[in-house]
Image (cartoon, rainbow, N blue to C red):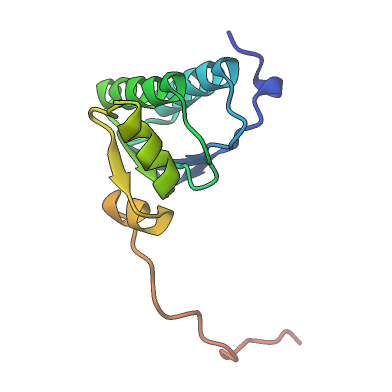
Length: 137
């Protein structure tokens, strides 16, 4: 079992979707602990979708690429869909140059598009300002 206090990658729940992000300094131990915690959360919370924002990830190595692929496969086996969002062009170029493929991993240009693919929709209108408020007294 992983010591959850040492894992500094937040995993937020929005309805039946888990939202998380990867940081640049992702070592092998942290990647493994992250995959373990995320799969446990998918099962425990019966999540139907997971959005992993990688927009802060500046570099990727073969271990992290494999971890993302395996995580996506594990999530699918648990009934959840994983979308990796926000990949920077240099990261995509590195993956191609290394011959790494994220088989079975869905991607989106950014987190908003990823959430939309998971069924979340952005409302273009902000809440009304100056809406009538009831006063007490």
